[in-house]
Image (cartoon, rainbow, N blue to C red):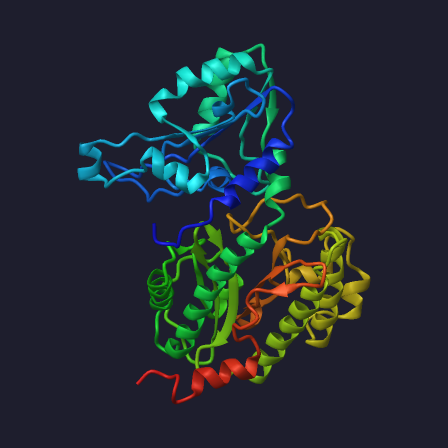
Length: 435
């Protein structure tokens, strides 16, 4: 693996939290992701399911985790099933985890080969009353492909129809919303790698470069720092393309006088970072661009201060909306009449700031979490307000990653340049500009 080993105590702690929420005499099952095909004999790079990684740290296909705290045989209260290697597999794909290696990574003492799952699982199910199965219940999920978890759900309910079934997703959403210190340290590492990439870009960006060249600089820096790569597809949007929220073409040439919006983040040890910065292609903001930029920055700073225990996403977004409303009036984009005539469900500011301000961050860039849950210490959120003026070809978003603590919000990206003057200085300094 590219990243430094993770202390297995993290995964032991996560499993203990899971066990505490399971009903008596129950068994829970987690499957790894599939290796996804493309066409012919092609396939995508394997990406582990974040739930199974959260609980055992095994980053390999065909892995199954079984947790059943109350079974009679103590060695079967936690079982890991991993793909058995062979000389042929080693030649073509490289070595797979040995059982001893799987134990060292996960802290699970009982490790079997995946081919042994059916026989072992049957004996445990017969002892159990409740079966917990995993489904994707993320509000933004668009599940078009049947997963290993879904296939197993059908098979299990067909074979054992008289058992009581429960959902794992609500438990995982509760657990994963709160990050331990070890987890926030891993996110911080991802943020540090992202900072290196951004500082590299400030030396590289100039009129005439292509968006995909900027993306290439990002990927280079990520890989050089032990990241697997971007935590999500990078958005490198120049000019009016910055007003397309999920722009991913990255195929336009950057021009003098335009802004370049860059939304990217490194993955490290499975954990995501998520940064957005908007910079002037020429190295200098125009007065209008700087006015809009500073308006977004003021909202971003004020929103960050609201990430405190006890607040909620609903109230938080309302408060951010009022801040943005004032900034848009000051910029001449909204009038008091617009605000007076707005509807409750469609605030006037949504014309220029149409997305949410924050989302949970962790093993997924849009991580698990209940939108109605009160903010708690240990939650990690992005803060990413933006103003998009399509008529002027201006799209500006500024985003940092924040940990909520009892002592106030902690900015994991506080060292990444964000002030307009600092960005201009770094982009135009002789020491920073390419020859």
